[in-house]
Image (cartoon, rainbow, N blue to C red; front, side, top):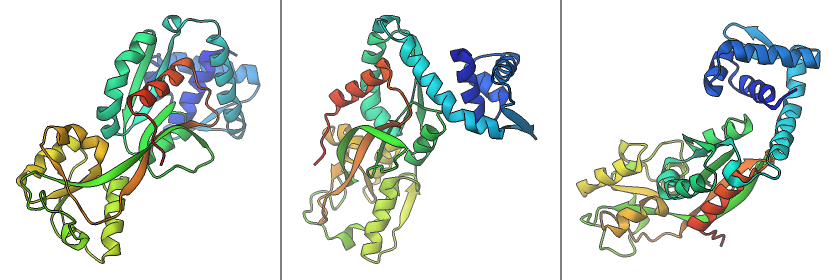
Length: 298
């Protein structure tokens, strides 16, 4: 039972498809089939059954799944003992929000590459709910998300930072130089909003519901840079994490509006599955994120 067969089993179990697993692992499909067959022979029972185009775990395969994840974790831990960072090989799979990718990840990747030149980094952009699901399915190693504090016992949080969501608009917007804007007045303007599945969207609608106001969305777009450009119409406003637009604020391309509301707080967090062993390069990534944006919890 070798580490590659275990990795292949976990990929097929996650993707439910030999062809997609082969593409993911950069193998021929015949290699994946051979590795699974060899593993089944060693164990003495079938791991998958094919129904239609998908390969489902058998009852025995489902029982073996958590043990396979633990075996892989231990094998990876043992294989890294005594190695210098420059010699360690592996793949670090990071799931991250687009806003955090541009605000933080781009800054830390060069240093991570210098410390671990033989480690491949795979970045998957998506929403927080997608990242948490991918963690549970072992499709990523770490998730870097902005959300309310995650309380799922399946996850461990190794970094978190207090974040503020702000109302923003063009410096030419009528509200840009106004102080203590009444919430009812703020919520009456057209909004350019991010993706409906995101926490900012949800929080904005919760605030509107508190004031019995129906929001007007002029545009919905899942891209911070596009939202900033669209705000230049001087009519619309948006509601976004302050970190995601800090460089645009510094360049005076947008302004933070002074709305008469309590601070709207949530947290950026780096999370991993409780059964995941933290490799040296995973710990290095966490350290670099912490250095780039020191933890603020209060």
